[in-house]
Image 1 (cartoon, rainbow, N blue to C red):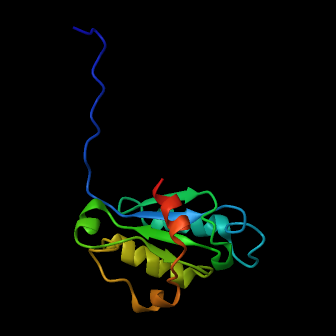
Image 2: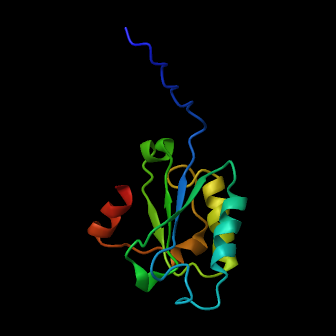
Length: 134
């Protein structure tokens, strides 16, 4: 019998969506002028504290759509049919607030996105989508 202590099993919390914010080669840099990139990430984190996981990720390889944000469903949302939603050209605080409202309500599969976000939705290539799931 091993004398090593057992590793604690993580406690399952409330399922929450994940909001991935591209901060790679173009998104989050001066290549997209007139946007407070650090402020955008901070506002998303503050607005979704306790409701969604917000993470900054490396380049999502959709630079022509910068700033890119992907809202991924929680496990419950995925079971309900939700799939990741890719949003591009998210360069204003109104769009950020719409994302916060939607993700806080449950995100893909659990809550309908505000209609205005349809203007930001785009479909990246399969190769790019697969990279996010790695």
